Amino acid sequence: MSRKTAFHVALIAAVAILFTAGTSLEAQTAASVTSVGKGFSSEPSAPQFITSQPLIGASVSMLGSHCPADHVAYVFVGLSAKQPAQLPKGGFLYLNPDLMLFSGPLAISGAGTFLSAVALPADPGLEGVKIALQVLTLSTVDPTDYAVSNGVEWICGY
Image (cartoon, rainbow, N blue to C red; front, side, top):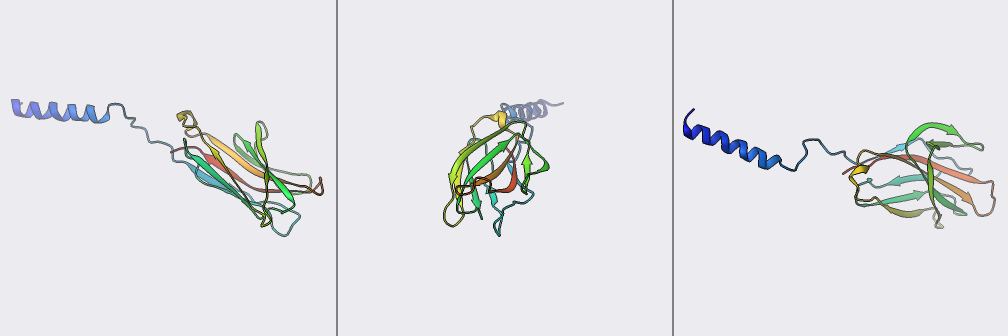
């Protein structure tokens, strides 16, 4: 091998090392949202729940619509979606009850909507973590009246 060829090989190797230094060759997990099942209500339409992408280090918007106006909303959070479990008066639970947290009560507008947000920490350990969410609304008039939304499953990512 000539000196000139050896120099080019060494130069290409050095550039390759510098280019990949400090970078991972593994692909990052893309954030995703999947709707699971459907909602239930004694009203004509059931609550619908949608969210923005669960991007690590960003704020995630959560929107509930078609909620009964005389109710308050709670967002339940579990570590994963599960096979639907029938609820006593109708509807299904779409998240794993082994570990459930909730936020609320969230006020529902006269139009039957609520808007909330949650900040996902800038923690790389969240990458690929699945989180299941579902809205439960409870009547402010009749304590036995409830409605539930569809479930939402997040995969946290970038």
